[in-house]
Each structure stands twice: as structure tokens, then as C-alpha cells.
Image (cartoon, rainbow, N blue to C red; front, side):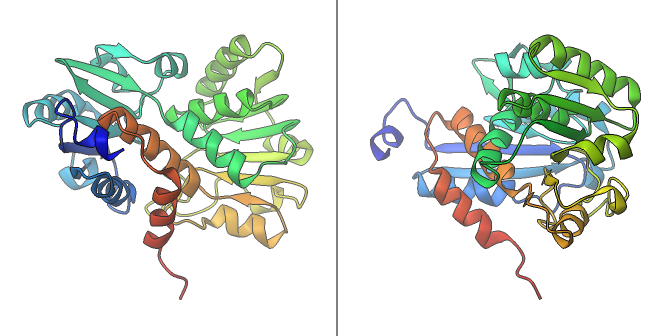
Length: 294
């Protein structure tokens, strides 16, 4: 790895950032910077928080142009910009095109190239944390950019039936229809009765912002949970969301959003640098960054 870093063709200095709303608690910057240091790089990662700047996703064209002019190597993109950024890009990776969502933008040779590492990140985290659970009947909450990625990952891992709910029913239907075409052997549908679907499910995937520090609460009534359900959350700050706490109280097996955060960061770093981060080292560093229980 050091030979790669010292190669004249490989730059030692990287400037990257994260665009999103309410990202002050994100652990992505320290994960990237620590691993960059371990790889022998001068690696700087900056938050570009729409809430702090009092902006919304309509500012994306200006923010991308500013980042290019300031010499950024790339950007991570999070809520609420993963789909809004697509029209501003020159190229999309196969994953990003298929998923209709981008969480990583590489600036290279005068082009903006969109990638999606959410899908691979969720799959690796799920296989690590819930390797032997049933994927026969899965319910997912959320059909946005992250939802599209984790739904694809669930089906690719073998989910036989996936029922999707979203506050925007049309968005849930659109995603379900697209996924059904992509995975014809599975049954993919937009949900009608959340209570009935969860009661019959083996697992629940939560892919909305509810439960984040800035949006506390549960994404569904706690009484719908049952002990035969596994529950996977993509939110990781806080690491033990209200949903996971409620599920654990019933004896459910759970998966926090921490693993997805780690593995999507590892894949994004590879895209930005061309080097291979040490995933276990990044995972250990992530664990050390989490607040300790009082």
C-alpha cells in the first residue's frame, strides 16, 4: 500500500467534503481523515451543512461549482440531495444509474462522476451483523435515495418479498415498480396496511431520517413491532435509535446504521483516492468515535 501512495502518479493530498442537511454530528469526516492519515496521505474532509448555511438543495449547482473551483477531489452527498444532484453530473456509475441516487461524486478530468456506495455499504454491514436471518418477507420504510439503495441490496441478498412504505405513496409505488423489473423472481410492492405487513414480516428495514438527532422519534408505532422481527436501521447518530431500543426491548435482533456508514465510507475513499482502505481499521476507529453510555 505504501508503494502505491509513494507512486509519482498518486497525489498525496486530498480535499473532499460532505453536502447535506443537519450533518454536524456526522462521523464520516473523522473516519476519512484518520484512514487517510494511516494511508500516508494529507487528507482533509469538510462538512458543507445546508442547515448551517441556511440553504436547501436548490443551492447544489453553486456548491458543486464552488467545490470544483476550490480544488476538491470529490464530495459525498447525503439527505436531501442524493437524487437532486443527478442532473448536475456528467457521468454515472452503473450502480448510481440503476439506483437513481448518488452519494459520492468524483471530480476527475474536468468531469463530475456520480457513484453510489450506499448499496454495497448496506450489504456488507448486513452480512456482517445479521448473516443468518430470514429474508423471506421484508418490510422497508422509506423510498428516497438511501431507500432505493438498501432495497436493491436487500433484493440482491435474496429477499423474496419486499413491501415498501413511504410518506409519499407515489414514490413508494415508483420504486417498487422499478425494483420489480430489476428482480422479477421476487415480489416487490408498495404497501397498503403497515400493521398487516409488519405483522407478517420476518424483517424491517428503516431508511428514513426519522430517529436522527435532529428528527427524534419512531418511524412507526412501537406496538407494531414483534419479537420475531429483525430490525435494521440506516440511521447511526444516535447509534441506538428509538426504533432499535424499542426492538431490542422486545428481544428482536437488530442492526444499527454504523456498519453501513463505515463500509460506504470505505468504498467512497477508494473512489476518491484509488487506494484500498483497511475496512476493519476504519470500523474500529468508528467504534471509538461513538459516545460512551453514561
